Image (spheres, rainbow, N blue to C red):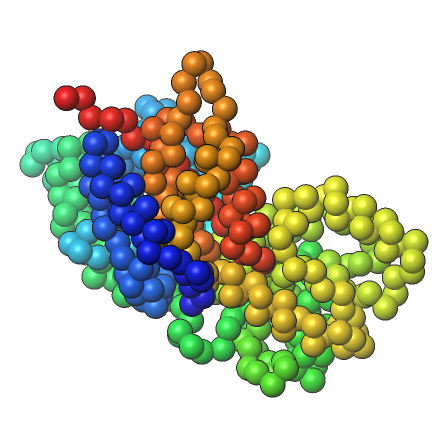
Length: 488
């Protein structure tokens, strides 16, 4: 891991300690206190532990999934309304139970024969199953098993993932018999719970933790110090498989669009610049049979699966054709997944001077959100400049691993705020109280402030963080926690 202590002087450390002491005058949550109490060594340990296991909450609409998520989290995070379909996308939270931390994924309701928006919701739920270590399947015990529930069971069986069955809305002893009826689903013991009142949730969570692995098997479970994992992603026909074949030195990957086959990514150990890398190629994953309309969706799923297993992504683009909306979406997927990023313009040997001019204009216009991503011009067909990938990968991964010490960070923030204070809004000016780096891979920073910091100012902080500490090739996240002064 890269540490940017650099020329950290004793005054930086004392500044940080003084600011931390000043926070005692503000209302802090238990989570705040835990974050502020975390040492630099703790951050290293969190990285080395590996990715947290993932538990996906699945079920048809309006069975109480989001209410149960809030119950597990112990706070109101997921939006809950008494109408079905409020949750539409996958929403991820970090949770803990009995001293074990895990990732909880809330999903929209899964429906049979869904169309339009409901189809997108069902597809998101299928992605959640695909990218989970275990599934918490929620059924409304007062209604019993419906045809839709039976259809979900078939999807779950195909996935092969461990399943814990939660029989929700069992609010008292009289309705426990309703839960027992759900043995008929064939998923083992139904755990009677009341998401509303918390009844039975502890036993259900114990059962879930029993089937969750200590480290996620789907979320990039790489061994520290082993070969770095590189995802090759991009829209179809940009040369992902050609690049892998050239790097391996053989025809390792055949792209086959025959329907109904499996969707396993092709992992390959590759020697580049005298070092071993593990490449994950999404082109080797074949398409499902029944979705002619879902080509973009399954391309997105293939990309997401590869990213979950990788540390850094090489986004390939065809330099000879205009940048498309799909190219931009793939780049955004990498950012959303929190992976390091390198952009490789393939087929560079076919590009003339005029096209290069227009490509530069397109990059300025369409890839404005990633000026920090290293760019490499290559030819997968001939192997030209393939060696240039390695310095770009190293640079991106080093930034992805970078940690800024608390003292250095607060010294930087103090200088920044003094030179460029937040603008006045409504006669008030929010004050930055303290900043700390909460995570690496990618770097995530938390800023404590006395009031809301506008999005433009947060982007300004991010831009200056990049100018000062580098972060070439990695997304970084700046979040703000507003804390008010205690009333005496």
